[in-house]
Image (tube, rainbow, N blue to C red; front, side):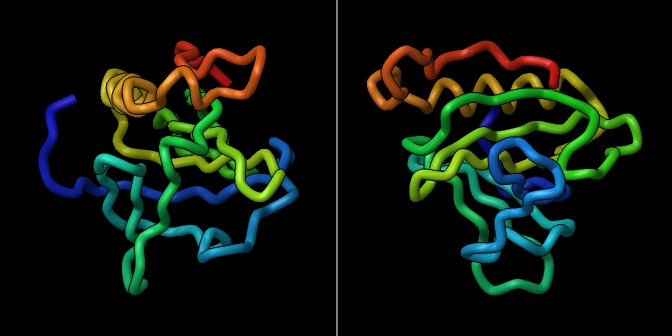
Length: 135
């Protein structure tokens, strides 16, 4: 995925334990909305429109990346959803993002994120470099 400036997208929310009705509300993750996303050396970042600080999901916290059509009780109108499964404070969280309508773009983002996740950061018995899965 070519590195360029922030790109437009939509944040669909963050689930707790992959239960669409259990929403994570810490650190600004509750509100859904449009904005811009980018990758830097440490994290995937999403800056929602009209907010001060971007959401950040550190690559060190990422457990896996999935691709799907729904997330947090929301359908993306047929567009692919990139789902980052990550851990914070003992909770398993899943954040969903729509970055465009082209599935190849979503797959490229999933690969780019996984390439930044180091194998030694994965919990015992789990491969950090898991192939993006439909989910």
